[in-house]
Length: 432
Image (cartoon, rainbow, N blue to C red):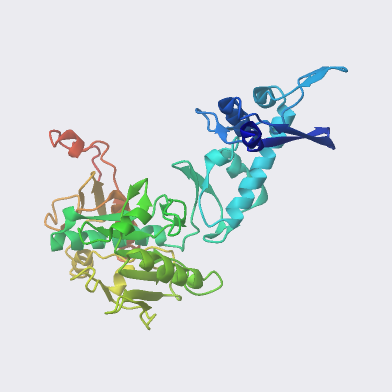
């Protein structure tokens, strides 16, 4: 009786057999786990596709395995998945197309990242070719997606960003960074720009849901809710932001306001965010939206979407940003914040016909290249991205005053990596 009860618990698997495209029947196989449990479990996993190759992550399974040996009136042999992958190219191609079809369906319908290991045989390049041939995919979170890249084994969508976002995001980050230095909390906080995916899942705690703020401020305070650290991850590292910014379309045909409003209130603020901004910097469409918490901790949207100056409130005390710092010209370039140059231009003290921007890893300086105005210079401790943005801004601002803005790469400079033991030698002597 005991033996019979154990046998009733044995797993049963099946194989659907076909000749060409015609189905000819189904085989049911009982796996004697009561006799050889380990062998039975290995066989079952090969039937369901739960086993993966360690090196490639490709699933090992019996599906679509050909009969590689047939002896008339005696037996047929099948089940060699290695033969399926290496010898039968048509079968492999058919399987690859089915996997691609499943991946495309998931990318169109799921709000979570798709792991490349779940789609054996399909690479980032394969997906790129598919999108190039069939057009962009429409995702419920990101809308129209024109491409994906693989980050930490997950297909991560490129964002269809509002024009100027790539210039405005680093400028905002630089302004927050300046406030961090001024307030003395620079070493105790972090700023992240939107690169890769910020991922969390409030239901399972697994890092799968795609969310990408453009600017994120992360304080390093012991009072942060430890549960937030479990739900927010970037590059498999936990973090808990208190302030973030999304730069996107807030009006017009491409408006993302409804989705962003729900995301801000139901997801970001639900998991630790204290202050959030939505910004649309396009000329003719400029809008700003603020999200805060009231005294009871409830999230609300400030009833004002006008283009205006903003401040960090209690979350970033003392941080203020002027609306002109976020404005863009029709070409999508943010206006110059270097008022020193405007003042110098109006005072007619800058006689040189050009400005040269020099870049190192941590310092940038903007100055005249001759001895006529040796004191007219500005040093900027900021990133190369921000400095490149500043150069473009200067080019637009000073063009009408007869100035040409030139970027010179010094080729080799002294950086932190050289421990400041080398000097930055002059590479090029400009004629003016």
